[in-house]
Length: 182
View 1 (cartoon, rainbow, N blue to C red):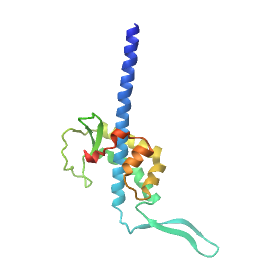
View 2: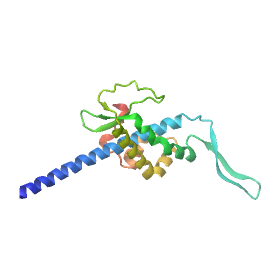
View 3: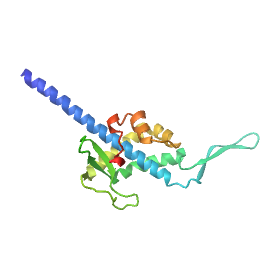
View 4: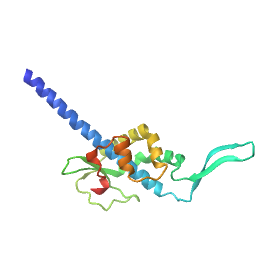
């Protein structure tokens, strides 16, 4: 009986490790897809478009403390984007990296709604994957909304790595390769 308990313990530890890696792959992939989607949406906004921010109260001298800021990276626009961005996870499929056996998530539908030109061989596309990815995305948005707004309110390089790896620890060092580079 002693041998069986060790075997059960070993099996439990192994399954726990596999589940943790799959969960990390999912959350890392969702974070990276979320960053891609937000960066693309921000780039679509006319850079000349602005929004007034600040107080609309009249100061004693008759002036107002209102500032015009670019709309694309305004908190109002980013909040609006965060409310709908996870719906786009249905446009992603799952791909297993043959060398690492880690999951990556790739956009399978073009931004204009047409099929992507990439080779879809080896990419799994189904409602379970998109639903799970959407749920992971929504969890990230809920937990890290302030960080997302902070990062996207100003232009920055390597947002995927800075946000998904360093700030949130959703991706480990082995997953720093973007799914765009695959």
